[in-house]
Structures are given as C-alpha cells and as structure tokens.
Image (cartoon, rainbow, N blue to C red; front, side):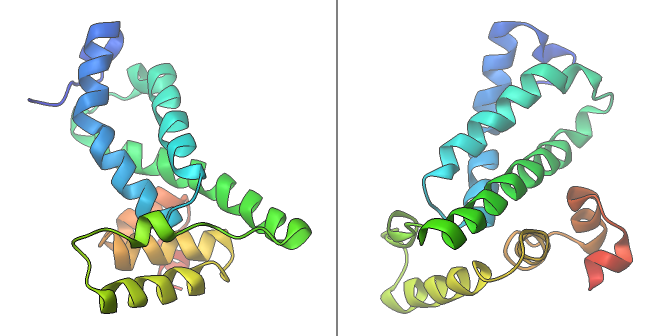
Length: 157
C-alpha cells in the first residue's frame, strides 16, 4: 500500500491509510529512542495526534518520514525528561523486559541491548536522542541535526 501524501491525509479514511502506512515506522523509531517502557504507546499516539493536526502544512510528501521522525524526537524528548525527573524523585525504573525479550534476539544480544539502554538512561535527553538517531536509527548527521532541531556542529558533538 502506498503511503498517503499530506494532501490525501485530510479525510478520516485517508488518515487511517496514512496511519496504517506509517504506524510501524513511528513505533520502531519510538522504541529505539526510548528503549521500551510504558511511554512507548503514548509517544506513538501523540505523534499521530500531531500528524492529524498539522500534516496539511507539510508541502513535500517525500519528507513525511523525516517530519514524523522529528515529531517522534520532540515527543520522546519530553518523555525522557519526565522519566529522568521521576527517576530522581521517585526511584522510577523503566521496564525494558518486553523490549529485550524479543525472540529474534540471542541472549548475548539481549545483554548488549540492556547495557546500551541502561547507559543511555544516564545521558541527558538531547544527547541520548542524538546518539540513538545516529547509531541505532542509522541517520546521517544532517538528519540527526534536523530531527533534533540543532546545528550540524552540535549533532557532531
């Protein structure tokens, strides 16, 4: 099924097709940025609410995924900051068990992923997002800068 363009995504049926076409992508990027936890579905829902409100402002249909990635980054940033605040105030821990229990992963891969996400949990939200986009999501540096809303020099750091 071809992805709906911004103009086509205005009606409810067309937006449903847009949702179906991009839900997997938004969920995957959100999972890789957050590492799991209860916020994952919240982020996906918030991204599509934003898309429903603002998609008609996007003029180039070829940039839909880049725009969605930027919305995911902004939403994930808020969730990560709240997570850090909860961890500081209430000893909140993120449950990565569901994320790390994927049957396609070997025990060694699960251990590596757990260490990576435990380490990422120690970083400030902006640094974590930039690192995850570059090294997990495999984005180019200019895509990291655009998605994070920072300069190329900042993205390189």
